[in-house]
Structures are given as C-alpha cells and as structure tokens.
Length: 180
Image 1 (cartoon, one colour):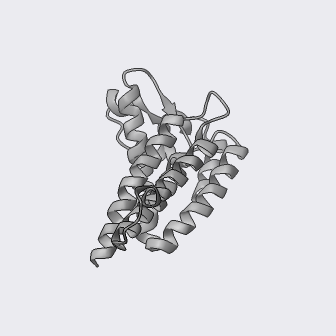
Image 2 (cartoon, helix red, strand yellow):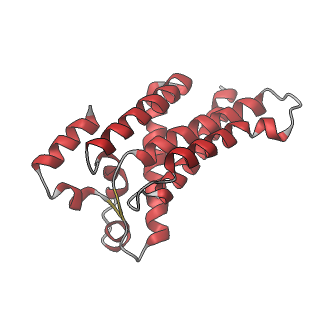
C-alpha cells in the first residue's frame, strides 16, 4: 500500500523523484542521508511498480514467515538501503540515481539464502559444501535471472548489493535465531 501511495504521490508532485531518488551526489556530495531509503519507494512506471510489488510480496512474505514480520521487513528495508548506499559509494563522484524497490526485493532473496545457510550449518550435519551453499547458489541464479536487467536503466549494482547485504543479514539473523 505504501508503494502504491508513493507512486500516486509521484504523479501529483513531479519533483518528488528529484528530491528523493537514491543519488550518489545527493548522498555523498550534499549529505542527503535519506535518499538510499526513500529511493526504495519510488518507481518509474506502473510496470516497474507491479514487478516490484509481486517480487516483494513473494520474497517479503517468505522472509516474514521465516523470521517474523517486524524483524523480516526491518531487515529487508535496512539491507535494501545499505545496498543503495554501497552502490552510491562505488559510483560517486559520478552522478548515479536509482529508484525502485528491487534493491529491497533482492535483499529479501539474500535474506532467505543467508538464513538457509545458517540453518544448514546449525544442523551440524556432515554435508558437502555444495549442499551447504545451495541456498546461495539458488539465490545467485535467481539474481541473474531476475536482476540482470533487460534495459539500460536497470540498477544491476543495486540488485547485487541488495542481495549481498541481505545474504549477510540473513546469515546473522539465522545464527541469532539458533542462539535464541
């Protein structure tokens, strides 16, 4: 609902994208710290919005069921934001702007993969490394399939770093759950 409301707001206020998109120059050149977060809620068009809503519903629901709604969605948004920060850091001082929830969607996929690794290691079974890393390989395959980008505007770095940050936070969340 939030994504749809912000998309409606974008239609009403044409300057919103310029003020809130994830921006390397905005973040590091002007200190606009909110941009990596607010950029997750903006979308280029209805197809972009629908694709992210579907991906977010599927992967976000799985994360929420796995580790709980509040910690799940918090980790998704934090990992997506961190993915945008890393992308901006790597592209700065070149101007780089990004919008869309796909960085958070791929963070959710990374969280699922990270929790999968933590759970596999927690079982302490004598498994081959290929089996232990299977959740990561599955996530990387989906990342390549869904996040490689079929247009020049696709933020592939955001997808990769969203997934990577999600992988790390998912592994940490899985290890924390094991200790609880």
